[in-house]
Each structure stands twice: as C-alpha cells, then as structure tokens.
Image (cartoon, rainbow, N blue to C red; front, side, top):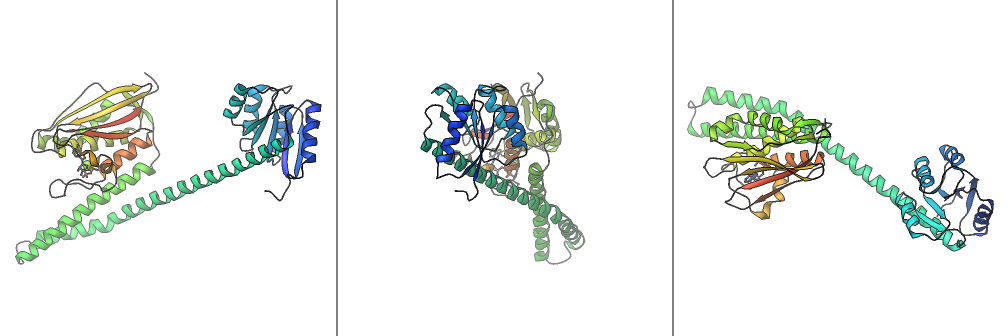
Length: 370
Ligand SMILES: Nc1ncnc2c1ncn2[C@@H]1O[C@H](COP(=O)(O)OP(=O)(O)O)[C@@H](O)[C@H]1O
Ligand SMILES: [Mg+2]
C-alpha cells in the first residue's frame, strides 16, 4: 500500500509481549514496518507530538495509564492515527468500549497470529484513508456552499443599486406622463413600475435569505414572547387591514438568535394572515415541550390550508402554490424559515387539510437557565 515503511508506535511495558510483536513484524514480508517501542503513556505522548506515525499499537496495562484511560489519552495525543489495542483476555465488553473510544481494532494477547495482525493493520490504514477522503469531501462541500452564499449575497446586494434607479425613473415617467400619452403608453408604464417593484421585493428577500445563512448566529436566551411581539408590531399594518386576531399561549424562553426568531414568526404569522379566503384571520401561537430541552412551536391559522402533496415543496426557494395575482409574494419566506430553524438545529414542518387551516410547527432548543 505504501512505498515508505509504515511507522508503527508500539506502547507496551511488558518486555516479553513487546519482543513477540517485534518478531511478528520482523517476520512479516508483506508489511515493511519501522517500529518504535516505548514503555509508558507519557513517553508515547511526547513521541507522537513530534513524530509522524502511521499506526499505534497500545497495551491497556501501562504503568501510567490503564484500560479506557489509556485509549483516551492516546486518542487525545494522536487523534488521527489509527489505533490497535492489545487486550489481555478475550473480553467482548472491553472490546466494544475500546472501539467506542475510537480504536480501529483490537487484538487479544496470546492469540496474535501474524496474519491477523497484518489484516488488522491494513484495515486500520484503509479506514483512516477512507475517513480522510470523507473529511476532504465535506470540506469541499462547505467551501462550495460558502462560495455560493457569498455569490448570492453579492449579486443581490449589487443588483439593488441599479434597480433603485430603474424604479425611480419609471415612477418619474408615470408621474409626469401618465394620461398625457396614449392608453398603451399608460399601460406600459404601469407594467414597468409593477415589474420593477416586484423585482425589488425578490431581491430584498433573496438578500435576506443569503444573510440568514451568512451572518454568524448570535445565540442567547431570548423570550419567544417578546420576539413574537416584535414580529406582530412589524406586521401591524397587515393585521389592521385584515382585521386578523393573533393570540398566543404563554411561550418559553429559548436559545436563539433574536433577530432571526422575529423573522421566523413574522414570516409564519404573515403567511397565516395572507393565505385566507376573505374571512377574519385567526392565528394562534403556542409551544409544547416535546423532549428534554426541546420545544415545539405551533403557528395555527384558519386559512386556505395546503394539499399534503405540497407539504415539502413549499419550503423550497421560489415555490408558491398561488399565482401572484391572487396573493402577492416571492416564494422565499418559508425557505428563509427553514434555513433559520435548521441553523438553530431544529426542524420545521406543516400539517394541514385544504379548507381547514394550516399549522406550521418548528422546534427550538431550550434556554440554559430556567
Ligand atoms: N399559512 C398558509 N396557508 C396556506 N398556504 C400557505 C401558508 N403559508 C404558505 N403557504 C403556501 O406556501 C407558499 C410559499 O410560502 P412563502 O415561502 O412564504 O412564499 P410567499 O408567501 O412569498 O408566496 C405560498 O405561496 C403559499 O402558497
Ligand atoms: Mg410568505
């Protein structure tokens, strides 16, 4: 597998066992190994600190570290080096615990067969290579995600300026020339003004979406009741115009980014008021503790409801179930909600029956002081 000899660190205080392992390695022609032998945990710790090591073989009964503690200390000193543990007895319980602590494999002393040792070593190295590959892929994904975020932010941010100019001048055209040209011209101007302001809303929502992903979360104890109050005051025009009644149960203090929590309530309550059939919107917000340290919030409405076929889709970007002539919108609101909730480590979903209102539910972590 490797052109270079494999660098093995053997941590073993018993001279007889150490000699045996040396011999097994020495006899093996399949693996060209270079063995360094130390007799205590502290020696091992200082050795790995400045020597590249491909594999560690660890005895569990050292003078200065025994059992799982020896495994833990080895993992701390050399977290990325595959570790094979030597156990004295064929004890499954200890074997499982050792593997849980991050060892790649274990060998039972007195039963070490050269071929088994070789296989173990190969497996340990392969597993490590595989892990590194996965890690690299994950880093690559994170990088490309960050690039995309950055791109979305820059694009939406830089588009705002020229767009403002288009809007100002189409508005100016409308103001000066409406009714002074022919009726076609009036209609064209209306289309232009309408298109430009729709684009402005889209860009503003896109910008908000990318900011939710880009900005660092400022987590703190936040009164969700206060956040809801802020959201309602931002929605006060809509509430007044629609005659909506928004009520809530006592809702808890949670660990959250306050700005984003306000945004979340605002989008959900805003939708609950918007997607109605002309009746008085009734919206109710509540929260239940579902498991330790987790709350499930509900925003319930008496609106149009949603066909179960679309439960997933509505959380995607630009996904709308209604034409913009029926209900204004960009289809970004719920995508923002999903991103906010997921950045907080929670989940969001909807339950609904067409014609019988909808309930949007999301989870959030509890505040640490209660
Ligand atoms: N409370 C609700 N009741 C019924 N339909 C809803 C509700 N909330 C969202 N929807 C549907 O999901 C779609 C996506 O919502 P959203 O992402 O907030 O975008 P927007 O409100 O801008 O259209 C909406 O267009 C609407 O069809
Ligand atoms: Mg919306």
